[in-house]
Length: 99
Length: 487
Image 1 (spheres, rainbow over the protein chains, first blue to last red):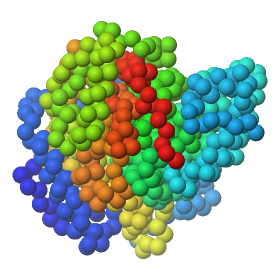
Image 2 (cartoon, helix red, strand yellow):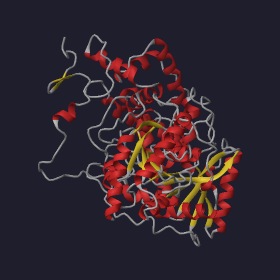
Image 3 (tube, chains in turn orange, brown):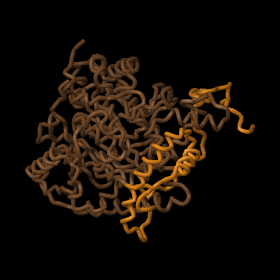
Image 4 (cartoon, rainbow over the protein chains, first blue to last red):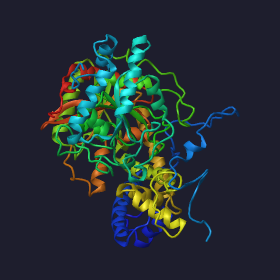
């Protein structure tokens, strides 16, 4: 984290690709300014000495839980597919993955 | 139809009327549906009003009351924030992405409320995917503050807070990731409570930031808040972070005697930027607490000033992962005009999400990306540890902390929407509780220029009983909770 963050348009474009959010040039530019400002404001964390401090992922202690390997009721196929934008029988239709 | 004064009615009062057969659940429900018809055009607290569901629920409740098998919430008309799934009823998250999504299953808390035969009046408006502090980020509705309809209700649970304040339901359930129950409760003059992380099941709550999200009640009184929490708290095997703990009797522990009760006033919550009216209201409230016998002392939480920055790394990071699922394939909005599958994803997400949601997804993706992970995400998680420890230490010496909920009263619609950083500052006093996973409550504590001020209490992990005790004692000693908006 530098003192003043100045993200480049290319960096923002790369994030828009990674997050699969299509953006116009104007949108990229607005996002560049806003994200740079937000990252500047979080740079305050550099003041904090965290040497030897363990990170907290969750505020409660979580342990993995197992359930018995037993059949349980679940949603039906119809219920599972009821919100699919393009349903085709018991399938969801999408554009070709491989051209 | 027997008419009831809805402006003052609490769960406790409605329970008495229903149990004594002075009013039926159906009559009560029809009263609310009428009131919703009258006030919604000015307030817009609901995304969906579920009239048919409500009338059916009310009939079921009356049957049960007739049999004498009712529970605390049987026949009580309520609302759910529209990011809580209820089978067969649209759950939109106030996003174009989920505008037509109808969940085929219930959130666990929806099941609990159904089991009690509560009455669902509808779903409450929110900032899109609960990201915001004014409910202006809703893609579907602009909710107005019942105290002044030119002002915001706060957010993200702005619909629930406005609905309770305008008496368009007896209670509502919201979600709180950085203050989204407490801050709108403060701005709308109602009681809003965020439980300890893990106390209430998150199953069926549409995920925003999973290590911070928690469901909680918005009510007209502290007693109601305790009643609702009693019904929804408890272990749920479908939530991997659910706490398996014994749930105390919150209601029977309410008391107005604060003798020997230790209340800490953290000096870091009285800072530059807090409005003078809010500060005075809170300092007046502290005097009331002293008068009730509380042992009040100043304490210090030096890492408070880092909580906002920690939040704006952790919450967007988790959001970027949680919201990756919206691709227009399995459910939700789908942009069909695309040449390729990838272009379909990109256009779906570009046109389905609003600006704040995009901002947080991209910020989170950046903070988690190779080369920046240690500097941002890991650093924030380490500071999170320090903030947690600081709270743990302070709660060795005090039973609760008292502070303002929000630095200001309700602001004008449009005032902060173009400046994300200004908007984020609204949550500066509520975020630390989410970072640490501890419970917090906001209760009415005054009016400044006709707008409500919220007094916040925080307590240690699973110390909800202490939280309610302080809030109830203050409420009973003052008249602020009886003030109704001028609508």
